[in-house]
Image (cartoon, rainbow, N blue to C red; front, side):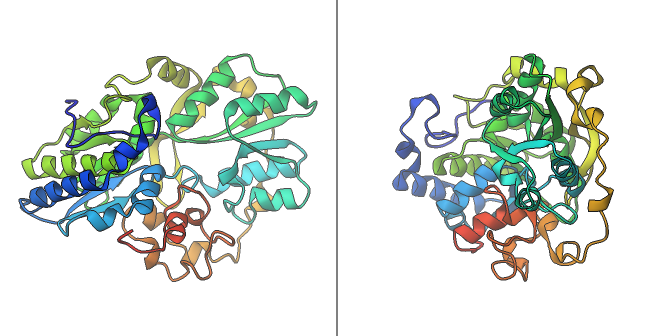
Length: 386
């Protein structure tokens, strides 16, 4: 694995390191990178090259800045399972709803409120009088628990970037009335599964720079070696993404199945080792469902037995059976959110997109989250060339 700076300035999360974000949005530099991308794309043996990114923040930037319109016909850029809210399974939502209905204070991130369970969402429970609160960080939940006499459950969702702070809270002697309902997920095993799906037929991955800050770019080396796929870790500004895609297409052209770090000022090969130690001290990878995609080995993060005292599934006898009755919802039959997250469909392939399914009245989870492809496409016009 190498750490070769790609063409043009590379960035990532705006403002990281004090950079001027406008530097990474320069139209002339973007056109120069796009021209170089077109040249490399013309040298491909079997175009188009299909590249999958696995981060909702990447999709937001791609849509907002119209990056797909700069890509040549020889390159396709699709979104994979990079929205943690979208892949939270319905039974997990049911558990949170059941706790809220039983009188427990449930705290979670705002995007989770409208995510459908089997028959209800947390927003439905809150409308009916349950105590459901929105937090912006795991530390916020500690503040709530310190002020409440009753039980407080943190419905904890997200990938490595949010799992590490959850682990830090558990390790920092939290209030005794606080417990965690973990729905955290681990991305690399999902990337393995998607790489094996024949319908996706991807030739490379644009990996999320924010998660790699925690895990390090080295976590993708096994995937690249096993499947012969190039992986480039990239940031989130327009020039970051264009430079990352250009590097990927170059690697595809040259038949390189390796890992490149195109975000070197924020990501190292080793990552944030103290954060990793905390994460794996509290959590272990177990097999589990990713909504609409697959049952994925080692991709769900469960609290280890040593921390059962803070595990809501151990503390409470959660009865969500009444929420799992067969539903007449269109979700099972008509929603294609799973296909969208697996990269085999686009939001505009769905007959409900922008009609029956909107951010105000979502049918599927992909229209709920700010990182969901459907909501992003709806916000920015719903065109595949965004």
